[in-house]
Image (cartoon, rainbow, N blue to C red; front, side, top):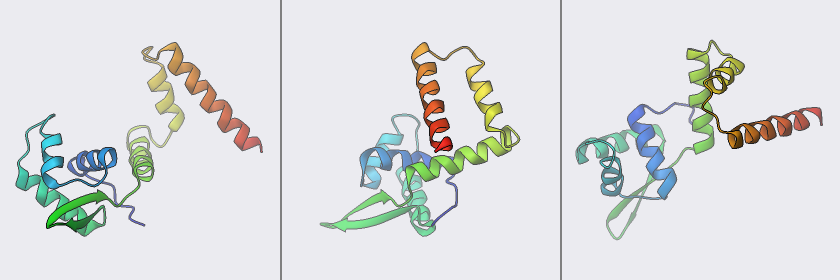
Length: 127
């Protein structure tokens, strides 16, 4: 299993692939260019490097190259979050949660969903 965390540019590409499934470099590049300008060759080179790292896989259909994510979205998110909590909150998930909820920007619906998630986790831990 590949445990290497993606760079910001690699994550940007992975987000497109996770959302859309197998894509051409052109599609990925056009999608990213809706947010910020990046050259086609830069996207291509990054995706080739990601293939070397095992982050994406490539297939060919009718001479068209399609790339798809070869790493799990959930596992990648967990790795990035773990690194963020470790480096920013000294490894304390509770400090992260307190910071997130303490800003007063959570809607009542979001708070209820969070409560439900905590209750489900507590039930799983008790079983």
